[in-house]
Amino acid sequence: MHFGEKIRELRESQGLLQRQLAANLEIDTPMFSKIERGERKAKREQVLQLAELLETDVNELLTIWLADKVFDIVKDEATAEGALKVAESTLKYSKPSKHV
Image 1 (cartoon, rainbow, N blue to C red):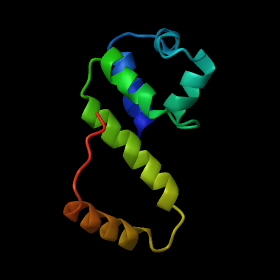
Image 2 (cartoon, rainbow, N blue to C red):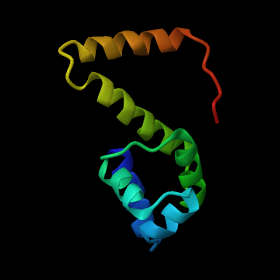
Image 3 (tube, one colour):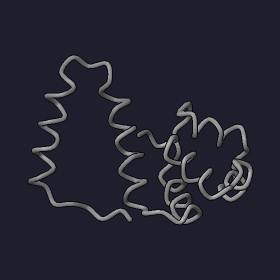
Image 4 (cartoon, rainbow, N blue to C red):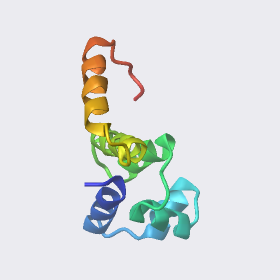
């Protein structure tokens, strides 16, 4: 599931309007709509705000958001799968950083 799909699912399940969340994020409704459709990327700070506004797990939203970013980088690369495996291996041996 992509980030925008998850946001739409959460928003609709809570009966919220795009304009309500857009106002809380201090962006206009068309921009929020583009985030939901995957035409524009949310900023990390917006992901954190959305997790709070939608009362959902911040780590889950950050994971989906980051996965979308990674996918956008590697989607057209023939060696994407191998690169992701190398990155995964590297991550296992590096010290995890706390950004939340």
